[in-house]
Image 1: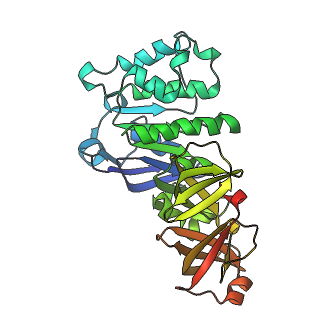
Image 2: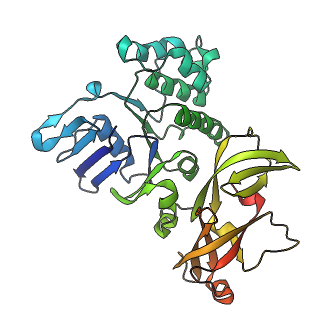
Image 3: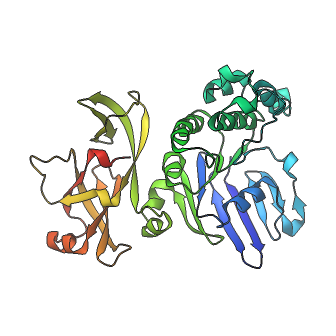
Amino acid sequence: MSDLTIRFKRHLSDFELDIDEQLPAQGISVLFGESGCGKTTTLRALAGLERLPDSFCQLGEYCWQDEQKNHFVPTYRRPIGYVFQEASLFEHLNVEQNLRFGWRRIAPEMRKIGIDDVCQLLGISDKLKRRPYSLSGGERQRVAIARALLTSPKLLLMDEPLSALDLARKREFLSYLERLHNELDIPIVYVSHAPEEVIRLADHLVLMEHGRVCLSGPLQQTLLNPKSAQLFADGASSVLHTVVTSHLNGLTELACGAEVLRLSKRNMPIGQKVRCRIFASDVSITLTRAQDSSILNLLPATVVSLQSGVQPNEVLIRLELADKTPLLALLSRYSCEHLKLAPKMSVWAQIKAVAIL
């Protein structure tokens, strides 16, 4: 399927939305930004819940809106699933009946996923006879996602589905969303203002501010842009794609290309793919490999570029590991000058095990 093309415009007295983007019709595209930046309006326009003037929306060969031709497909005719901030389940129906409501909307020959399969995927097989009021917030949201999936959508829209959950439930729920991402071939557009959700889920990241797109692209590349550190309030960071290889001595070891990363032991099965977020401020640099150090992760790297950080006396350094994996380090300007860092220099990146998220 081709990309998702969106051109949405909206002018209000105190707000202007102006977006022209092509999102990949695969994986998870995350719209990220502060409240009021236009994320939810964009999602509602995608769903056809709001008809914005002078706008266009097309998924592959399916054109859902082209205002220049006075063409608009209403929500009920768009093959989408929509998961709101609140689960919006039918309280008078049990879980199974809620799921069958979505199931019956689709002709048998159009169904791509079965009730048993989606229940197993989202861990709700033992809750089919329960009413929504007896479920936790995370369980309700899993039922809402299952119901949306049972309509066999060509596109799944999710509007901050974790916003009402506490931190423990959010982290539990994220594991289900990761399974959904890994096991189903359904493109997802996901709205969030939580960096943890972005890092765990996003394949493509769209950073929004005041109704406009500031940065857009694959997650790993977009995070390398210094401006992302300003839009992510918690600072510049890198994402490394790794695989769990072992657990020993209170540590979990991950393969990252040709290198090994060590972090505080996590309850993750061998072979599981893991995205690791590393803040640039947690990466230090030496010119030679440190000996007798408490820092467990010592990685050979090459300096690619140096740019001014958010603060005038800071420098954001882009490194490349041996397999070309990018890694950011944030150093004081004094340290950079003391080490005489420059592009193409060979250095060692140091990362504490407890600093890997």
